[in-house]
Image (cartoon, rainbow, N blue to C red; front, side, top):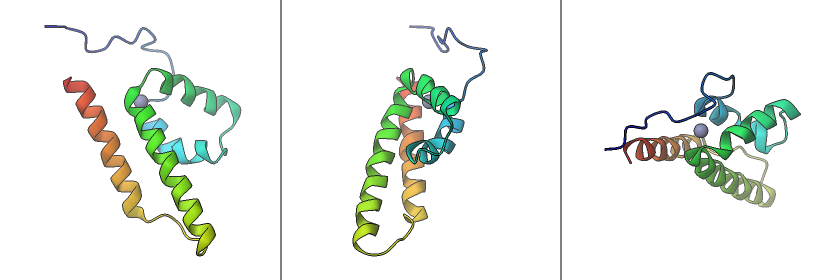
Length: 99
Ligand SMILES: [Zn+2]
């Protein structure tokens, strides 16, 4: 019977939420964000296990896609991959909430 739903001490401060962070992950990994945005994301990730997990799998997928496209032809990763990643991320979030 633990009653901690929101234990973020920084609640109310401006900062990205998971969905915002998620939306910017690919830009972040590509180095397209400016320093301040990178910082906000890194700050968020520090406290957010689902995002860490998601970022790790996204990074791996991007590396795999780059390796693949380098061998074959410049192609974008299939949209299927993106939705699968998003699903995995949401599952991680849900699991965390119900834990
Ligand atoms: Zn998060």
